[in-house]
Amino acid sequence: IQLNQAGFYPYAPKIAVVTGSNSGENFYVVAGNGKDTLFSGRLGTEQRSANSSTLTRIADFSVVTKEGQYVLVVPGVGASYSFAVSKDALKKPAAASLKGFYFQRSNITLEEKYAGKWHRSAGHPDDTVYVHASAAGPGRPAGTVIASPGGWYDAGDYNKYIVNSGISMSSLLSAYEDFPAYYASLRTAIPESGNALPDILDEAVYNLRWMLTMQDPADGGVYHKCTNASFDGMVMPGVTKLPRYVVQKSTAAALDFAAVTAQAARVLKTFSPRLSDSCLKAAAAAWQWAEKNPAAMYDQNAMNKQFQPAVTTGAYGDNDLKDEWSWAAAEMYITTKNERYYGIFKEHLKDNVSLPTWRNVAMQGYYTLLRASGDLPAVREDLPLIKERVLHLADGYVSKQPGNAFRTVMGQSRRDFSWGGSSVAANQGILLLYAWRLTNKQHYLDAALSNMDYLLGRNATGYSFLTGSGSKPVMHPHHRPSIADGIEDPVPGLLSGGPNPGRQDSCYYQFTEPETAFSDTACSYASNEIAINWNAPLVYLANALEALKKK
Ligand code: 9MR
Image (tube, rainbow, N blue to C red):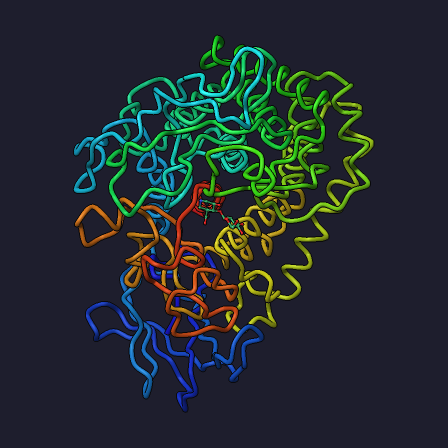
């Protein structure tokens, strides 16, 4: 019996999915004491999932609004995990997903008072980083030592990648811009919690300061990543002392950097005028570099043929930069109001726009324009088209939801199950929340919540993909600290990638269909790694749902 293991808001849809062939007809929602039956209902008709051979029947108990701790019982099948109906059902996972970023911080000691049993010493200091031969320039020949400290580790590995930091920062800064009042009071027990900035911005600034070190002050270009030559072993952060490099400057890195620093400049303006100012200058310099170097693609294989040492860590290579131009132009425009940037955005309005991923970022710019455009004449004319594209995607999600065997938006296409599919679910949720903002129609909000249910257990694997949340959370993510720290529970608040039939890691998978190809093993980097660009949209989604819940 699969359901959101964290629980349900009193005034929200409540669905459990009974999987497998069974003869059950009725289900009962029973109070935690085992005695009081609050509700009994009939299971829906059996359905075969389009994404696996899983058979499902739906138990809809949305009418239960009384707060409490319950189990759902299906005679002949069994009982579900205990779950809550509570106005605070998602409060903990929402805060935990943001706290997850604190645990990814690279160069500081995670003290026990903030990190609990997962306290650890500082990881890679990155105070001595070599300019890789691929990144050599006039002021900085190969081998020049620079400092590039701080920032979050990307994922289960210990490298720091500008492209992936870009979309992750965008999701966090946008979360703040869309829900400032909510975040003003969200505290996650991080070292900066007492200062004037909301915690979500403190967390973002920690990574922002690292990003700023990745720009070459001589020309404004941005190194693609700060990395080992090859991945560290399964050890705690900072144990290995292998050389660290900044590698080739890339157009994608420059544009993503420009977009993030432009957004940060406006978000931080009142909190921290000097940092805001530095961000604005950095954004302009990166943009100019990109204009002069529009075809500096990051092609790791080609780079390795030319330069030593060979670099084999995450590539984040992308050779279609139309969407990066579109996004960066939108952020630059909204921050500076300089119409030249809007002109570039407008040139890209003819391009396709789709759900955001690290390599497909145009939608992030659409969101920013939707949020900020009210009184900008240049945007007004294009706003209907931007809205229509968002609503078109959202309507597609909502219309296919009833046919989905798990009644989630996630999984309407088999392709949703891919490397980091959990971020597909989270980003679909975000898109639906923008659709809700545009229309005030409740069904978009409910659909967004269905994907939160997916992430926390209502899926064909039965796992909650968020570490530390729910009765059956993933326990063995491909995450070096969680593997090496000797603590049974993985580091909390981290989102596993989820089912990925590509199974590029060749680890052991018990099931291999699109929605079941998941392996809760440390081996499985293709289905069970964690990553900042998956956590960040979860932060947005979970906290937005918290901010918008019916009180
Ligand atoms: O999320 C990335 C996915 O889209 C790619 O298909 C995959 C292979 O290139 O890489 C993923 O990103 C990984 C990165 O390269 C290195 N750090 C861990 C990331 C998550 O697995």
